[in-house]
Length: 116
Length: 116
Image 1 (cartoon, rainbow over the protein chains, first blue to last red):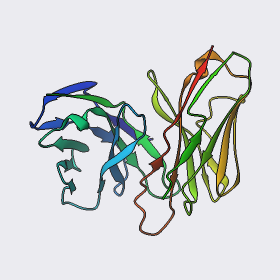
Image 2 (image 1 turned 60 degrees about the vertical axis):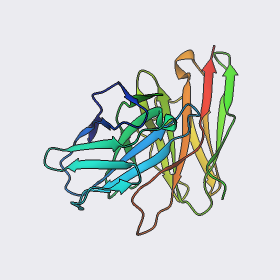
Image 3 (image 1 turned 180 degrees about the vertical axis):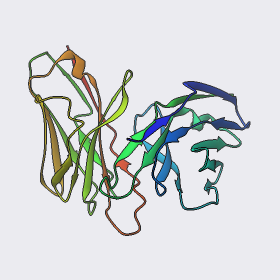
Image 4 (image 1 turned 30 degrees about the vertical axis):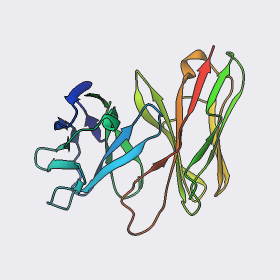
């Protein structure tokens, strides 16, 4: 079974600065998808960014980008120009294609605090 | 477009009572997931459906939990009898099953259950 590990229970950053959240995963599969979800205090889970394992290019969505290291099974999230609205819990998630279509395995989460 | 709709948003009940949580997925989505979130265990997949059929219920903790999806626009998660350890936030999520889908899940706002 796949596992996802987020080793940073909490992180903090100053507004306008850059922060990187770490995620590692364990899998024997060669094709899969990785995601970062954001959970603000409102509780709703919001997709931040996704990465297909077969793509070598790192995904980018505005101020959010990932550093995908397939060999190292690492998938970190970089938030540039941090804003107060970025404060939330962030979850890394893994999806295996095939019969478990759509089933996501989540990491434990990282609480991000943004200081003004 | 309306997102995933869950009800109730909050539920407080006493041990031994029956609890029913409801979910309306996004129209056109044919995969539906029930997740449970607790501080101790994080986000756990309880069960998921494809085209209204339960595919994997291995995450359902015990026989007190049951889930149904009588049609494409409605699902319920029932706990009977409820116990204090069932206190958690229960999320419903849906996903389209198309060839281009990368498995992104669209989450509802969650139902916070407190069992006294």
